[in-house]
Image 1 (cartoon, protein in one colour):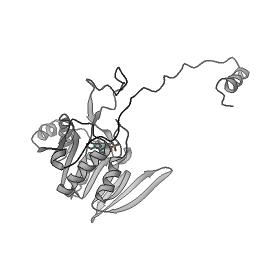
Image 2 (image 1 turned 180 degrees about the vertical axis):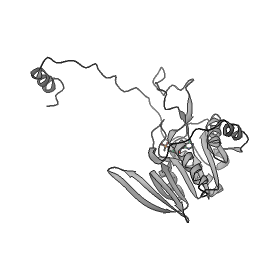
Image 3 (image 1 turned 135 degrees about the vertical axis):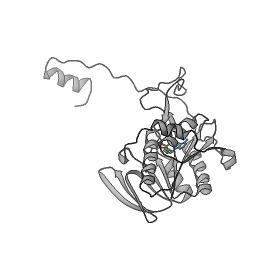
Image 4 (image 1 turned 90 degrees about the horizontal axis):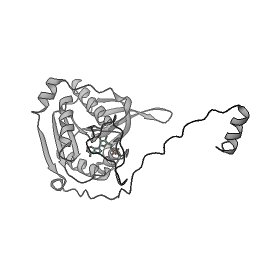
Length: 249
Ligand code: AMP
């Protein structure tokens, strides 16, 4: 069984991102970049499927700048067998990513596409769903448990107020939620081995995909700073402030 794992290069989740000087975008100068955490969970799940003898090949894919090769090498060190970079300097929106992935699905014929539920930079939560629509594959989003047996995947999904279990025919698309697993760290020998694993580079033109952006980023700003609290003298003053200043009662 072949598993395709799309991974995105994003600002590391420990870094606090700030707007650039004119507020037109986030300032990414010299920031630490990493694999999107939900994509790391997807890679881990694919590796676990391989360790169980269910998956036979894991292909990590990223659509983005040349530097995304670093994150693909990390995925290879974590256990992916080979990697594909769809190289572009343009900003790629979820629809463009999904279209590139659809073309790779035609070429690679994966049984399972394991994505993150969401990229933490744009918080879009769209790509898996769009890929489902474009390929016609069955899909399960927000997976907290995944088992694959006899051409079927069983997924437990985290939904508001509980858990939902669904069964999908393969090929299928599954997006990973936070509690699906806890990703391992890449060992030094595996980091060395990853340097020799195959990493192919293609362009969106070679895939025949138009990645022109459909939306325009107008600006970004930080949320308003929280004001310092005050200590009230008594309940009378508290009630007065709640009623006349905060206007919540
Ligand atoms: P999003 O819809 O942007 O929140 O991203 C959801 C998931 O789609 C991510 O966790 C990745 O698995 C995949 N994805 C999004 N953008 C890319 C990209 N540029 N390259 C590869 N995979 C991506």
